[in-house]
Amino acid sequence: QVQLVESGGGLVQAGGSLRLSCAASGRTLSNTDIGWFRQAPGKEGEFVAAISWWAISNTYYADSVKCRFTIPRDNAKNTVYLQMNSLKPEDAAVYYCVAVYRDGTTWRNAGTNWGQGTQVTVSS
Image (cartoon, rainbow, N blue to C red; front, side):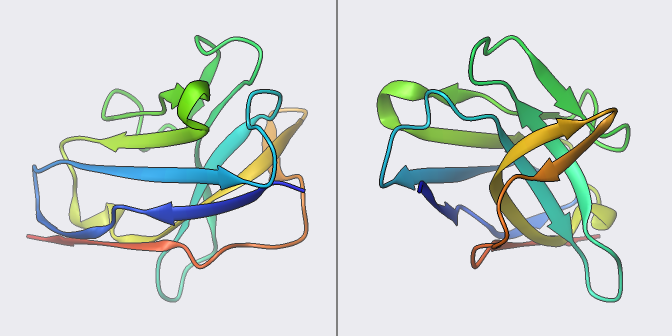
């Protein structure tokens, strides 16, 4: 089973950028759809972005992050990224990456676990 570790979070001013990394170990990511989710205090977790393993051009985004976030992947490095630009205070959350599958129009965690996540804080 692939194990995923998130990193790259931190404190950034509104309008700034961060790049999160999702590094895999255990097996290759090259045949796994990967998604990012986030959860802010007191709120439900929400889908952020996903990328298909078989076509890196197949990317999917929540409306709230479209045109600001991208989800590139580097199969050679076994890593998926979340490039976050024009950050807003409402983007502050713990971000998690997981293997995902698509259930109709909804992306879901393909496993049962969530990792440690990486905290993103956006100051206004």
